[in-house]
Image (cartoon, rainbow, N blue to C red; front, side, top):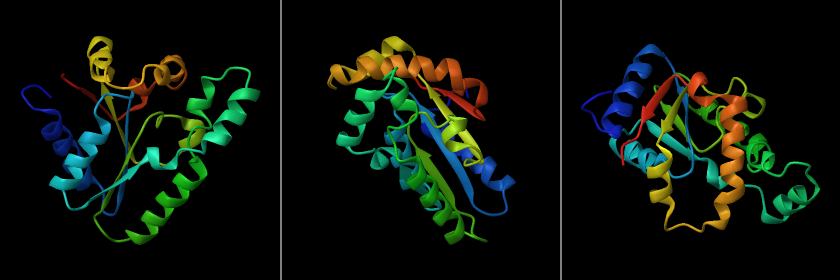
Length: 178
């Protein structure tokens, strides 16, 4: 992916994949918080009219539910991986898209974290893209965000990387430059 910016590189990858598929294509856009997934998804959606974006953040479980399960969980960081989002509702909406997009060359781009979690998303995505950014740059990008929110998230992310191995299990890895 040398000499291309992230948008051009991902656009090319999606274009190639679209040519491989005769119908709709479901792509998971995974990466740590702060890697630029949402910005990239918005740009892709603007640039390509056949791309529909589903934002995982819109499927967060309620604060009350999260507090309840965090309080009763042996290892709270696991909640981020299994329980932070309403995976049942996400999968239902993806299925609705598949039914809608039958015989149409449409792309559903699911943007969010922990998408290479086989327990939650087994056989959901046709392809996955993983955005990678070094820890120093990631920290700089997060400087304006509430720090308390990232303590347990970072622990969960390390756990996710070691258990789910998103770099090994993604179809494309994009190294994001700052």
